[in-house]
Every structure is written in C-alpha cells, then in structure tokens.
Length: 288
Image (cartoon, rainbow, N blue to C red):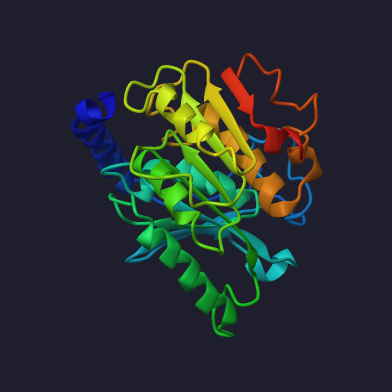
C-alpha cells in the first residue's frame, strides 16, 4: 500500500521540519492578532484564513504545547478547546502557524508533544489538564475553558488520532486531515469533517473517502483540497487552514457565518471548485 511504502520518507520529512522549526523563537502576535478581542462566539472574520482578533501566547510544556488567547482574563468569555495530534515523527512546532491561527480565532489548543499520536492517549490527556486548570483559582485558565465544546484535529497519523480521540464522550467534533489508516469511524458519534489532498501519495484520497463512507451514521463532510500533497497542511496550514477554522467555529462556537459554509443547498464551500477537487456531504450533513 502507498501508506506503508512512504511512511519512512514522510517521517524523515516531518522530523526535518520539526527540527528546523524547533529552533525558531516564539514570535509576537501580528498586528491583526493584537487587535481588541471580540467575543469568541462572534464571527472573527468570514475570511477564515486571516488571523483572528486575539493575540496569541504559546506555552511549551513537557507533555503538551498550549496555544491560546494571550489575555484570557480580559476576553470575557470561555474558550472552546481543540486537541491536536501530529503526523509521524512531528512535533507541534511543525504546525505552529496553523495552531497559532486557531488560537487567534479564540480557541485553546492543547497539542500533544508526541511524534506517535495514533491512539490519542496524550491528546485526550490534554482535556484532563485543562479540566484541572479551569478548576484551579491559581491558574490563568481558571474559569476560561469551555469544556462543553471540544474538537479533535490532527494531520496524517494525528488525523487517525483525531478519529480515535472522538470516542471520548467529551469530544464534540473531529477534523481528520489526511488521516492514516489505524483508526475506525464506527465508534464515533460526532459530526466529522474529513480533509484530503488531491495529489497526496502518502494517504491517497481514496483512503480518506473510505473513512467518509464509513461515517454514514453521523453528519460527515469530505473536502479534497485541489493541488495539495501530503505536507500541504504543515506550517500555517496552507489551503487547509480556512476550512478547518470555519468548521471548528461552526461546530464549537455556533458561528452562523461559518455554519453557512457547510449547510443548506447553497452552502459556501459546496460550489468552490477553486479550493476543492472533490466535495461531498452525506445525508445527515445535508439535513443539518
């Protein structure tokens, strides 16, 4: 299978990217990110790929790296959670631009610091950490974590992990990006947004479509990014960034503008042939 043949090469590429990015300093927020924060439940921007209104802070710890709005005390809201899984051989720094972007949009991201995330153990532990810190009066996260709205997302092996994490009752939606094969959609009961790359030779679209086909018991959407290879989502997320952001804002924040990208007969993403080489919604997703 292509997945088996290309895994060593992929691991090397991701590890090289991780090492390169790990020596970069933590950069301050861009001017757009440093703007006066809006409520996390309001639409940050219909241009989902643009930075949100929050300045971003990054805490690199032993087990997780946390990306979150810098001034939680002043935000006036609880922030939904995204637990993140890395591709084989990678660390969160490989996806730093994407994870910073999600934090700028008002999410608290708990990224597992493991290069072998497949079974989602460390990802799910990120929820446990945030539960404790939300309850701790001495923590900057105290009273600021929206534990009722949690998404699982990840790339490649971490995409499979996003599906595996979705068996946790605390997880409300999953975003598997080019997910590896060691997962099953049968045990999950949340809405799911599958993302594939048109020219991905490591996880070909046909494998992602198989996951989508197995998800007929839940609302499921499939988007195949035109021209994308397997590494198209590393760094700042590339063309994957905007749809991932829109889905998470729709599912975890109830953002009406983001919802319109995925629902209704004239949904925003439905006819976007510049972005998608293939786009599908199952019956349950169409009924939303």
